[in-house]
Length: 539
Ligand code: G16
Image (cartoon, rainbow, N blue to C red; front, side, top):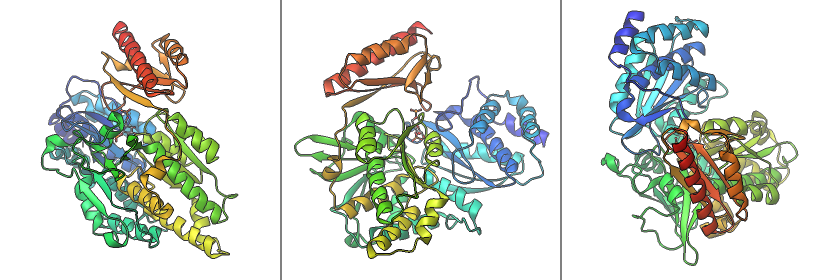
């Protein structure tokens, strides 16, 4: 096998760079990724063998990043993000010299006590980026060099690959997550949506901006499995051109809307029309609308979290299960302070904080029976414990209201993609809730008032000198910078700000919120200027 790995590795030589498994796998300019994807293929095979031949997923995508970027991430058997210790092994293999790859591979095999005779099984897919097919070939070279079995699912959204990974590993067991096919995904969501809606009709259509990414064609496919528009929900698809690769995530999509706090310039939505935007691989979703009095209104991940937690909390109470099941919300430092206050004080649901990255939030959410997790950027989902699923399925209803609540809860557990944040599934969830409440986006928006906030991207010579602590809410390095941020925050009413290095882009991110728009902008500028200065001073 050594000779095979070496020969294959030489076809994918490593450039003189240091690679790091970041917030969501390896991500960078696509032309630098060839050796990384090859080595990730080796890791996928090792991971599968280590887990007795369970299937591992590999997704080739750079999600919200520009079209010239690409990335690769690994999916564990139940559809979760790769176990953290393995991020370290992946980084080690990614940084090995080209000729040392067989040695590092075998070192890992030995230290992790992996039997090379165990079968290795991998499934993979990619988004619509033009660099995808060549990177798939690098991956396949690795899988063939180490004798792994593989299935190419071609173009998929990231959450679809997570779904398929879990379905593959649970097929034929009592935990079966669904039919192992892309069609199975649509069928599952379509049937669950019809059950969850219970004949309710949405108030007006929803306009979906697909960021000109893979979400466009996949949503078009999903529509075929949903009840007809006249009976439930009319979905209007925009920005679904996947043939012009340069327009992916460009002036549209969830990241654009969230960071710029405005609708895509191409939007033709009228006043109060419900809009949402997906990102390039359809794992994030952001809602918004144009209020005739207040202008653009953003309904971000925090809003989706509070809407879902409140709705599910009510259903759990109606089902008579409030005493038995613990509901919680997981947020990151980016959550608007007003949303945290609303969830804790008004909804009376506990909130816990983790660093950025769905892998952290997901893990924290599994500590609850109903764990609602969303990053403010619209990346999130809801996970249900075995106890919750059992309670929804076995409780004997004593009244029609209780029966109704239990039925809706059961439908929601099927509608929600519990493996990872999924824009298509999250959209159907939001639409279900709004239809049940008979709410327009205006009513949803009026549940609480966001503190004005600003997110700034700051370029520094070396972002790795910035180190964080306290769920990324504070800087521990460079020394003294946090004290200066604290002093700046103290000058603003309700002022809160933090800086952290991005794990998907070569930049620092600065977030600031305060009582008024001008104060939030001012605080964001001051903290950004400070970080830029300090970043230049220490490099
Ligand atoms: C990825 C992660 C998200 C994270 C985002 C930004 O999203 O999956 O959890 O919030 O990157 O991360 P950072 O601030 O470290 O750059 P996506 O949609 O790009 O995969």
